[in-house]
Amino acid sequence: MKTPLILTFDVGTQSTRCLLVRPDGSFADLCQVKHDPPYHSRNPGWAEQDPDFYYDRICEAGRAVCRRGKELLGEIAAVAVTAIRDTVLCLDGDNRPLRDIILWLDKRQADFDNPFPPHKKLMFKAAGMDGASKNIYQASACNWIRQHQPEVWAKTAKYVMLPTYLNYKVTGVLADSQANMIGHMPFDYKRRRWQGSSALTRCIYNIPQEKLCRLLPTGQTIGCTTEAFSAASGVPEGLPLIATGSDKGCETLGLSVIQPHKAAISLDTTATIQLALERYVEPQPFMPAYPAVPNHLYNPEIELYRGFWLVSWFLREFCAKDLAQAKELGCPPEELLDRYIADIPPGCGGLLLQPYWTPGITTPAARGAIVGLTDHHTRYHLYRAILEGIAFELYDSLKRMEKRAGIRVEEIYVGGGGARSNVACQILSDLFGLPVKRTQTHEVSAVGAAMAAFLAQGVFHDYDEAIRSMVHEGDVFRPDPDRHKLYAQLYRGVYARLYPRLEPLYRRISEITKRSDVL
Image 1 (cartoon, helix red, strand yellow):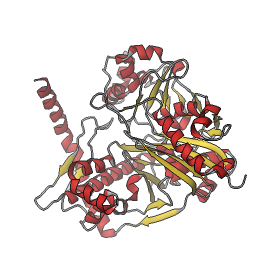
Image 2: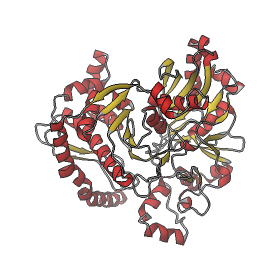
Image 3: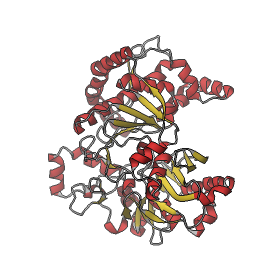
Image 4: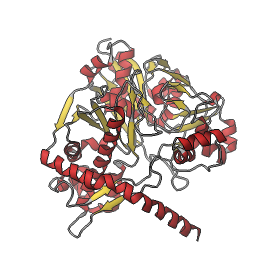
């Protein structure tokens, strides 16, 4: 073998990518297959996909890469898979799907059928978790399936995450990484194992132990590529599949964030900010820190559920002319809008946006808000306000996590589709008052997954060595002191005060509109 390669599959919400990753972090080849459609909705708020949709996309992308790079197939040392989180399947006794996949985007609600034992109710109430525990119970797909499709639940031998099923389709082994168990599952995040029957929150998603898969540490071999997978994908048979982690966890690693003075921001459909700590620190009350891809680390994270989805929403609802112009110019519409908003001053002439288009678990009453509109504002001011609103919320999240962890972040690394925007990156730098760095590629999840596989194959001794070889600093955005001062005043004087003042009104809106629905 000349230069070892890792064949990496990165399964996202919008597309699947297959990459041949070199030890220097570059790619020998890359194929992206769009998901069309990314999901289907039989009812409002549902997000489902055909059971083998993602596996078929993996095979399609694999065929393209293996066909183009026949001479490189002998250099592939291992395979790695990283995929979207909190996306689940029900499997029968032969590991065949019993229904469509339920995606993380799905908003169906289970009925709250008084499932908690009396002593757990008291404990939730004493801990201030009364409302949060009910919200999480209702948001858990396993509870909805058990209530509304009892015949499916009765036949379910294994209830698994999407990457677990993909591992099975690739190797014939139903097992997964501990760093992939991120979602509505009875998982002990601190100890990296399934919860015991007496765990406080086990009753929220009380999935029987026999329905859960086998867990492995990151870096272990799950199994080897099968003859059936090889025939479908073109990938050589017998290659080891290495346990990695979730897409966000791999992204954080691929951005080189494994020390507490760094933070990773993902500007994707969901925007997130993650830390990397050796101590287990909950990022906010009742929310766990996730197991990182490196087995000795945790990733405290705060998520903005509708992150750069807001950009897609804005383009769809307000920008027909801009979309047509971008198509005519042959450039992405976001690139065109960046030109229009680059000269709009910070603060958008007093226009602020609170990006709560979807409520969170700990903010169930939240709604979006646009504050400060005047007659001189245009749709371009609103677009910049969306970018600033996302940045304000991520900044607020970082301040809360720093306080809980007792640390101070000095550098921000940014990935995801939104990181392509120079304006968005500069807004982050000016608002945070910190350097914001991009690496050499936007495919950082694939880099992180490949890093774990290279380490498992002995190419690197540790993650520090892997990062030095595979992650290279790209563009650096540095804060302007005057703009940072203005953003700091807007944050302290306005943004940080918005939700506490609006939350009672959000609740009142919900009460009134629910009554009107009944009428």
